[in-house]
Length: 382
Image 1 (cartoon, rainbow, N blue to C red):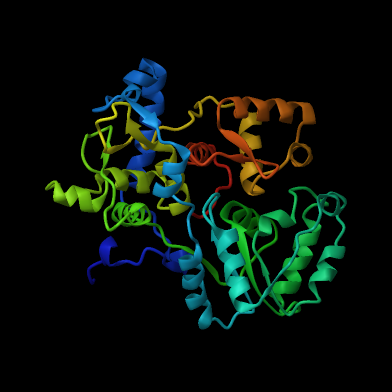
Image 2: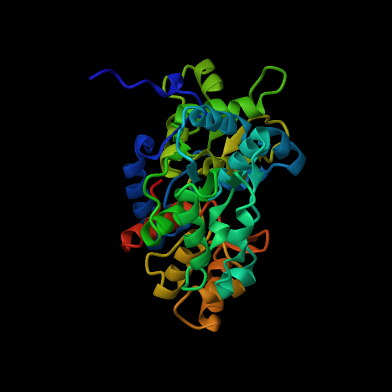
């Protein structure tokens, strides 16, 4: 067997077929650590669970203006170009591009569609989904080159709510709707694969990033006048970014970011949120370096999370987020119980509202996914 290419040789934005996706090194160990940390926190308290070189009370959050310069929003254009390269040789009429929550499939497919003059199909209304109205599928027949940036917006998980997307996918996969590219949340994809069947259509995703690639990316977006900032880990006291670590003689500069990569399963969208949320500056004005507070600190999800809360979390993931009204429609208990469970999760910081929908927060996603997997729920392939 030939040697595997190192992460330094791998492009930052690589689009691969789904079966070629690989989680970063140490991902399994990261899950064990997360379980151990949760138990340690419960036994000895959050502050004692893991010792820090630099305590958080010595640091403060960065001003929003500075943070916007150091960690600007992700530019998904390179991923859209990588997708375009993959689609060049494709003969299939319909192709899927999937990512987990907060990881860019909507932006990537939207940008690709705009560049290639494919029309983005509007999603059905909530009333159409609730009533099982399939008229929106007929509207799609007017386009022969089309894109769906977010298929998770095209169904609700109940008898009426699945009818339209079932018909749409049957027509699309049979070639009756022409050529299309479908962006889809990985959890919605797993669900639709189970209940509708999407065999035969090529599926692409972003390849995971290792710690070294995260280091390159975070250094690049923060570089000013040729200099990337000095960022130290509060956990180890060592430089985090590759260039500054090398200057300090550290031969293993990416250990902290490899830990983050494993925790996020290599998904840049999730890692970006951790990086942005956890950067700090010293309270002392004479210090210039930045600090990354424990990158894996997250909203704690108790191991004894109840069945109702667990079902709420799974429903939110399968649909890529839901409003309260729709959430009540897809759960096997009363709207009052669903609302109470959602409120409890909101208070714990596990869910938050974005664009009118309740979603799993980026920093809670890893622990939520692990909980659902441990309880044998249907989980995503990424």
